[in-house]
Length: 70
Image (cartoon, rainbow, N blue to C red; front, side, top):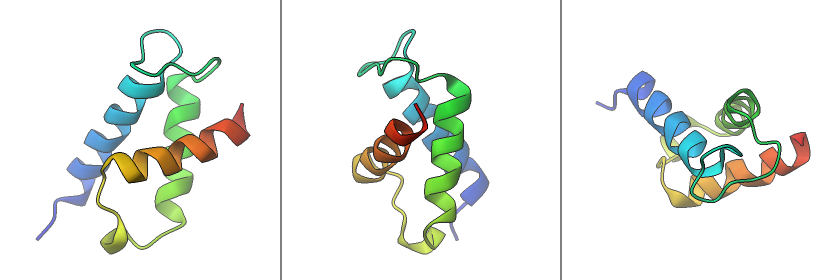
């Protein structure tokens, strides 16, 4: 059985570490932790958790949502 709370927390941190405008690997201007977290929440709400793998594909989907929030 998947531990979704841990997966969601780890995935959110993964996205923050990747896109955060201050120190992200692929920093996006104005992408704060709060905006990235909101984008992750919107993405997770848009799909069934069973269809999410919390991988780079899902991270890229979060990026698309994030760009609309900025």
